[in-house]
Image 1 (cartoon, one colour):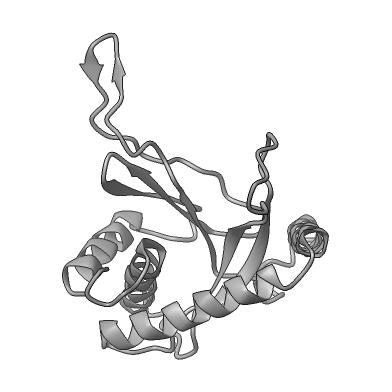
Image 2 (cartoon, rainbow, N blue to C red):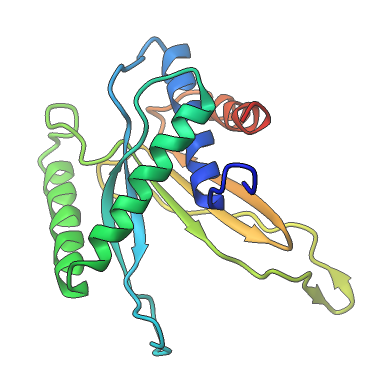
Length: 196
């Protein structure tokens, strides 16, 4: 991360993007165009300490298909900076309205059983949840690891949630039966991290 002047999110999405392409290729469902994900973004203004979440969902196109992890990282970094710039330039209410519209379209598509006929709004949902930076204890016992478990949104087959705890980043993968051998995707994420 320091060598490439990237954020942890850039590195994680680079690994996920490479792993998804490899997984799809192994399932004979390879695609040449960039994968589009749904990603929550923070809408809270600086200095806002009010309670509750203030997030919206945006569509993010990851990198063009490549075998070069640095090229993938550079493209994803550029895309994420551009998304942040666009989100900061739009009133938070507009992003919330867009999020509600995306969710409504997904629910209608699922209710009408058009999931296989209509193109998906995003191939998967990827979120990054910052957790405690320090080691936690309960009754003197050290909490060693924390793993995220999330849900699938309507008409979506994969949710990847990242959760940081005590200097480590854990990946939680939840998928529908449309994604066989999910462990393979986890292995490909691990391999992508090793080769970056």
